Length: 369
Image (cartoon, rainbow, N blue to C red; front, side, top):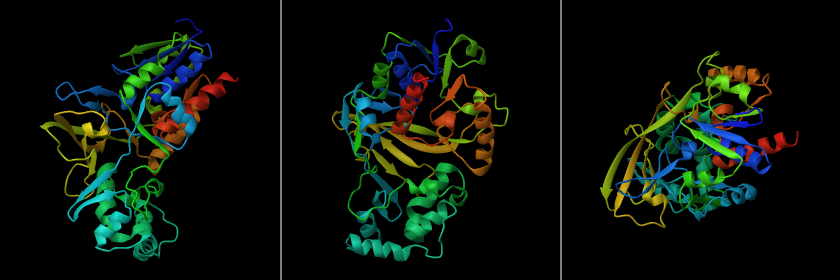
């Protein structure tokens, strides 16, 4: 490569969107990824036995309130409307989740209207907690101990591998409590799944004469001198050779099974109590209800700490982690040739729409210089 090329490290949404923006502006861009496919953790493929479109690294439902981001992704796919409706399997029964009016009435055996339910749950909440300092205090203030222990405590402990009181209150603030019968998991205007999957969509996003894609190609520091600019979407600690230590993430893994017919009647069922070791069960054909399949693909999800050979998913962001990240962030600001973006490089939990919006903004700001 001559020095006139730009490099995007990672062929997920962040790197691919930046590459597309640069390419449409007339710049040549190489996109590399250490995996054998584009799409990052959004990668989808057909299961050979069932024909079901599998979300290989876990289910992804595209949702956003940003019309410009929705219109952007719709340039590269047919986005099928899809509303994720999650159920929670507990020792007291199966309930709608997130907690909504149906959950509240079913759980407590009541027939409350929205106003009555607000007052009822407010009375359940711990009024001694004025400023929640952590996840547990936030939950106890919001919904009280019964709902917390049934729907939130066990799931959170399994998902994050620590006591909820060790986690930030901000994690829970992303999860709504509704006082109506809206059982949609996401409360956003635009929701859907690409009809041919995310890998097809990102492949089309990368189809441009100014973009070259090289798979099974890992980032090497020696590449830096070959390019005008580098947009890096991998883990920031690995970019710097773990010089300040390893940032902690949680990762997930699955037990796969194939059955005839319909296994659980829903795409996602959570197992929020401590008893079952797994956190969720996904039945992938329900993520594409416009398709028909005789067999079904079921994945049971478990969570664990991310080891050196694991794919990182969720930045843990405990105080010790944030102290380490701040050192990496400070170091990254000294290298103007490299821009860090995306969930892994910025060590933040970002939804797909936020990653796309960030990538568009980063690319367009760069093009203005």
